[in-house]
Image 1 (spheres, rainbow, N blue to C red):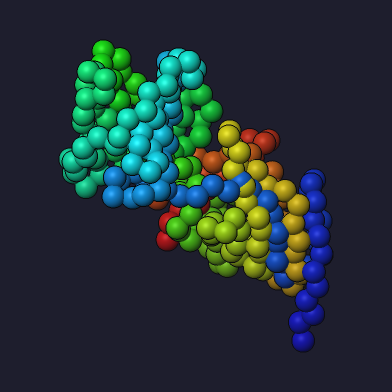
Image 2: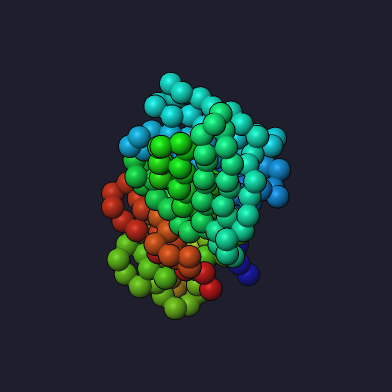
Length: 247
């Protein structure tokens, strides 16, 4: 007979006895939003040097430049699809030509490093702006990620460690021996993990050691990156990494 227990975990190293864990971690949440004009949802792009932002909501776009000192609102321009990854908005605003290209390609914010799902190029009159668009959370959600590397070491081939970020701000999966669940949250500059809970079930020593290392690293996550469409990397605040791939 297997006896299951529930325990809380907080900051610092994990020191679980052998057993099954149902972990509740915490890491930041934002909705995934598509950029295509057919979508009625809110969309935003940002860039730096010079600082600018462009939002779209309710059929209107608003461009802010010069750290918000200049603000221009206008109806969403005509949009055409260039290819299966790119759309182009064109129009004239207050006598100035506008050309906005949005490509579905991972883009890292040059100021914070935060990944976003689109590369954005905007020409407005004689000014040109480059930046990133869409919501960072969309790069976490929608996939069942498999951990392939933990703190520089290859993960055990069995049992798999898995991670899934859901729409309701929860992250769940297998920590090796046991299932875990958690809250997740995004801030302006990163991804963070807070307090949680875990049930306990015994497995072989190498598996338990990997599980404890994984849960400790998850709680220390500070940001994430997406080096490719199929790879997600979680970075801790002490420079460890959790490398995950789409199965």
